[in-house]
Image (cartoon, rainbow, N blue to C red):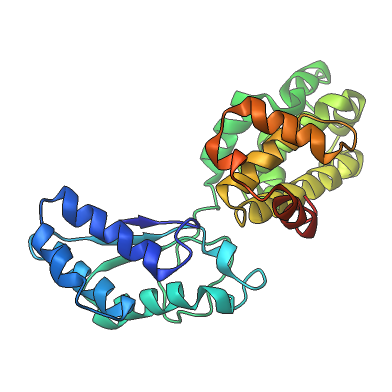
Amino acid sequence: IPFDEKAKNIQQMVDRLETILKDLGNYDATLKGEKFEKMLDRFGFYVTEIARDRDPAFIFDNLETFQETPGGQMAPQFADLKAVIESLFRKRTYHIVLTCRYPVPDFPGLDVLDLGEVDINDYWKRLIYFDAGYIRKYLEESRGGSGPPVRYIDIVKLQHGIFGGNYRALEFFNRFAAERPEKIAAAVQSLEAFKKETAEILDKTAGAMEEDLFFRRLAGLLEPVEREVLGILSGFRVPVLETALQSQESESGSQSLKAADLPGVLDVLHRYTL
């Protein structure tokens, strides 16, 4: 049973369980559940009903969007979500999976599995698939009578150590390396040369990774209509008046957009520096 950043309060989580019960044909449980005044009690009752003849697993995805700071405590406005997870932990009956880009100090004793660390063999295959920076091509061109100055596997190991096997970082590296092919051509003379010549590309890759992650963290905080307006704004390359957005709004046919408080939405996007 998945819950992501869209489930920001306990009412939305209760509604999710209620929908599941209805899909299972258990309307009686939904009627009984309405007798519980406290939403946490109702949530617990629905969980028990679902688990009568099933073995549910609860997945709470993207918890970083609920943290005050990366790796920090959950923000006070998400106390409902924290209470729900704590209640499930106390029962010790169900499977619970939490996904987060950072440590989750609110729930000590977790079994942590790092999904970002890719095995070097898989990373080697992806590097060959991307042909990132045409490294192998330049290695072949630099091959002399006694073999190439540096082995490809040595470069794979070096990049795996730098990027931690992150495929997204490899995509950025490939893009920036294509802009500076002369750097890669000069880099294959030795590992030291590779480190030196690609330092600028690696810096740009690290910056792009931070920007990419930061944008996704901010975008995860937006309501659907706010993301819709952000999508419209992305089509403009210069500042525009609110009337231009209203024109787009009327052409879109989106009822949620037409009913939106446009100045309020723009204020939210401004506060998030989007």
